[in-house]
Amino acid sequence: AAFMILRQMPRRLILRCAVLLGLGGLQGLIGWWMVSSGLSERVDVAPERLAVHLGLALLIFMGLIWTGLEAWNGESHNRTPVVWSRGAAVLLGAIFVQCLLGGLVAGAKAGFVYTDWPLMNGTVLAPVDWSAGGLAFLHDQALVQFNHRIGAYALLVGGTVYAVQAWRWRLAEGSGAAAFAVAAALWLQALLGIATLMNATPLWLGALHQAGAALVLAAATINLWLVRRSQARLFTSGPRTRGL
Image 1 (spheres, rainbow, N blue to C red):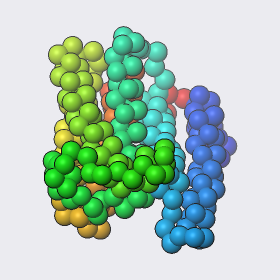
Image 2 (cartoon, helix red, strand yellow):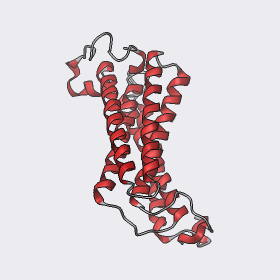
Image 3 (cartoon, one colour):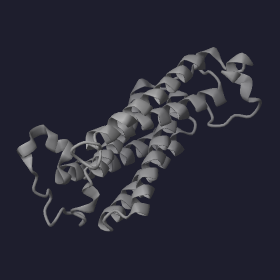
């Protein structure tokens, strides 16, 4: 509101800032919806509600990063080939889904069981209780941990291939380096996840792994922004009001 009164906010950013503000209010409601699941018949929150709460927080986080980059660098009409923009978007979307799978692991307390690696209790997939039907994908400790593991492997392969191709073609200034930063962050996060699991998820490692997920998501968001803004630099010289 202060920036708008002082006429220091570009019109193109007003709507998106209003949306982010609205999502912040919605996050409070979803937070209560999540907490309420632990106030009757159970003493912890439902994994799917925790994942929704986490997912909205990460969406707001991504929106803030994107809006900050747009505000800092000003408006641009440069665009890169659609196929690479889609590739960067798919990579970001996959990382976001993997974060949600991690939320299910946390909600189901699946990080405290099957702490061997690369197998799960000596097998590829530990026994799954299918009596709950489709809810097993949200609540069963073996299945949610298995899905999170498979998601990590897929991301490591996809992120590495994407980084190599982006570096070879160098489609946008800085995009090759950004793609490699995402790939490196994915590998570090995977190693941290393995260490967290094999130590039965101590609080400090679990918190570090969650923070790492946010950093990987931030790197992928910046990478997509750079790809879509083909000739933009992450930071520009001159006054910050150049994009007004």
